[in-house]
Image (cartoon, rainbow, N blue to C red):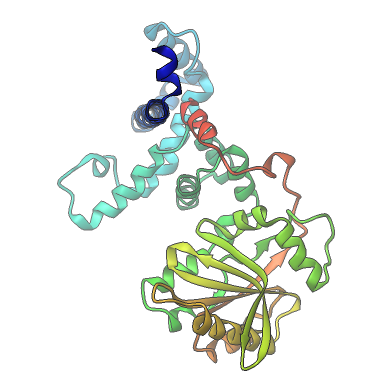
Length: 361
């Protein structure tokens, strides 16, 4: 009987399903525990700030709170002086996003405040260890800190990936490409598309050389496609390199073709190892028009063109973009940043890493 059960396909599939459901319940429980613990930390930091306890009890305040709290709870570990101190930092950083604590918990607030509360609520959704990293690196900029909290949630970033994007100024680069989206895309799609593009793009994951020939750069980017996709951001899917299109009896080859899943649009990327010039954008506009005509189905919206060049003159770029009636962007790239550490080469997090991170306190 035992042998029949273990070899029966229906039974085996059921066991696999149970295992998956159990795993899912563990992760959900971990998320819930993390949420409650962070709300406790928030309340501790709020007490310290509102009651001015640090000033009242002197230089050994955090050591004393840690010792007395662990004694009251009969704990041998956890709630260290450093943790208690960071609860204060945690509160002081994010409380700037709201007028007062009552707004966070008041269900009677008008609906136009609900977005602010939902925005704020996401700070309780990432592991405490990642908050410590953000607090250390971002200092006193709550909007920048919230940006990285949201990106961590959206992309399931672990410690190393988050550190890399903070170190490479993602907050300043995100949405910084010059575009004509406000003129060529309807709202709010223009804002969504703008937010997806960066400038400059960080190509420091490429092998150590500062100057590339154009063909070398395209080959290097596709050879390191996972790193390139991480840099492009969530939602980009790689379609092909030197993508062949035929029209009017002529062959044309797109440098790099991607699909932006959230926008349901192709993204035509051309890379130039020289300074931007007007003809570059005209060539890209032709490729975008071909993609719209030859690849788009009823599902796809008009494609976006992105020119990534070594450098650009902002005034000339603005003039060029104003003459194009298709959605286009111009960005720069850098290859001289500090190289990605080895542990980022396989930086896409696994479910196990996500679960482990959520359990950290």
